[in-house]
Image 1 (cartoon, rainbow, N blue to C red):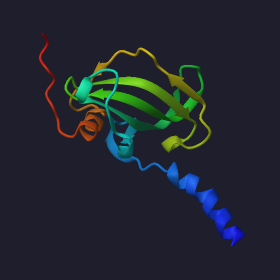
Image 2 (image 1 turned 120 degrees about the horizontal axis):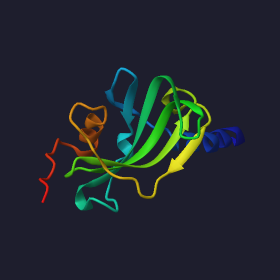
Image 3 (image 1 turned 45 degrees about the vertical axis):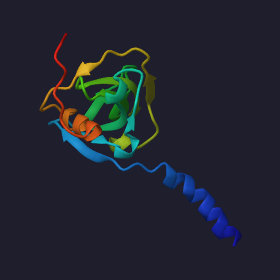
Image 4 (image 1 turned 90 degrees about the horizontal axis):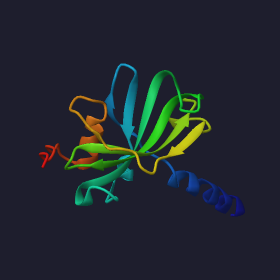
Length: 142
């Protein structure tokens, strides 16, 4: 009985942190995945059209992080503005192996990163569609 209880106590936290990555797009150099369970409404910018979501980009060849360390994948938290069709990077964690495997080699959080427009056909366009639901046209400039 004690072993069964100990087993349950040890495995439940691991299951709680399991992430299901869904492929959202790709290029010749990388694949982009999204954690659909991480999609949350709201944010400091974008009002009702704002969504936060985690993405994972996995590369075929080693990349170099801002501090010079090599990595094969990066997990990132983005703020999506569904009406403006823009994305703002909020944090990144770099991993030495594909699919966010291995001990993280670096983590960066961004306080004031500029929003970038998401253009059709880019690897983040399908992530935007997954996060926002349907494709929305950007609001015209005032």
